[in-house]
Length: 445
Image 1 (cartoon, rainbow, N blue to C red):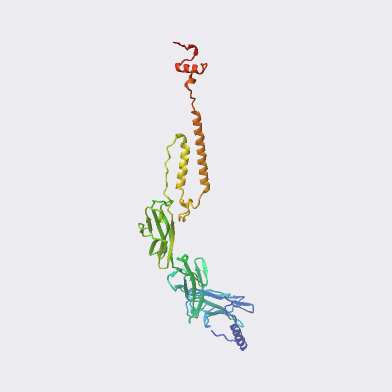
Image 2 (cartoon, rainbow, N blue to C red):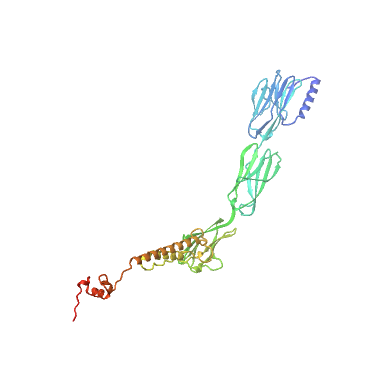
C-alpha cells in the first residue's frame, strides 16, 4: 500500500525515522503526536516458546496501525497479514490495539519489531525480541577418577550452547567453592562456559557430592553432580575378646584386630615390640591367641594393617597379674574364729591386690576395665584398722571366758576346817568325813 504526501511531509518523515534510529535499544517505546500515544514493550522469550507483541494507541483518531518485522516487512496491516508466515497470528485488533503472537520462536526471530501508526507525521514504536537459549546439560570432568587423601584433584564443569552466557557455581556438600570461569562465544552468537575448581581432599571427603549448578534465565535447577572417591590408609583398633577382666597367670588371651580403609587392608600382621611373639601364640587372620599366660609374656603387642595408600597400627600393652591366691582358715580355738577370719580375709585381699599396687610395672592397655592404676591407701588402711579392732575384741572375749571358768581348789586340811578347832582336828574330820568334832572318838591303848 502506497502513501502519497507533500514534500514537507516526506522531509518530516525522514527526520522522524533518523531520530528513531538513535533511540536506545531494549527500552519500551512511547511516541506522542497530537494527543495520540503509541506504545509497545520489549519481549524476552525462550527458544521454542511463544512471544506476543502488542502495539497500543490511546485517543486514536482512526489512524491505521501496522506491525513490521526487523526487515521492515509488514506482518499485519490492521487485521490483515500480508506476510506468509503462519507462526504469526492475530490475537486482538481494535482501534486502540494490535496484538500479534509469534509461536515456536527461534534465534532467527530475534531483533527489533516496529509498531507503526499512520499519522501526520507517522509514529513508530519499537519492541525488541530477545531469544533465550538454555544451555545443554552440564558435564563434569575430573582430572582423576580416584584420589588419595592429602592430594589435590581438579574438576571442570562445562555448559554449552546458551544465550546469554550461563554462570556456574560449585558446592561441595554444604560448602560453596570458588571456581575459575572462562566464556567462549561461538559463531552463531551462542556461548560456551567452563568453570574449573581445585579441591584438596581428606578421607572425610570420600563419597561427598560435588555439584556444578547452572544459573540461566531460561532454565532452573540445572546441575550436574559427582561424588568424590578418596583412598585412605587403614584405621586400626585392637579389641580384647577374652578375658573380660584382668589378665592373670594361667589365663588365655584372645585379641582381635579390626582394620578398615579404602581400599580394604590386604595385609594384617601381629608383632611384639622389642621382642618376639611367644612361640605357641596362634595368629589366625586378624586374631591373636595366646594360651596359659605368664609374666614373661608382658610387653606391647602391635597389629599392623596396610593397603595401597599406606599402613597404620594399634598397640595393646599386656601385663600379666598374679593368679588369685586363697589361704585356708587355720584351725584354732573356736573363741578366736572371728579374729582368724578377718586375718585370713586380709591376707586374701593382699594376695589378690594387683601387682601394680605393690610394685612398679607397665600400664595395662585395658585401663578402665578393672585394672587399677594406683594404690588406694585409704582402703588398705581401713581394712587393717578393722582387722586390729576385731583382734582386740577377740582378746577381750577370751579374757572374759577364762575369768568365768576360774575354780576354787581346797586341800585336805580345808575340808573340815569349818568345824575344827585346829589343823589336826580338820585333818581328822576330812579323813573321816565327819562334820562335827563332837562325834570324834579317841581310843588309847
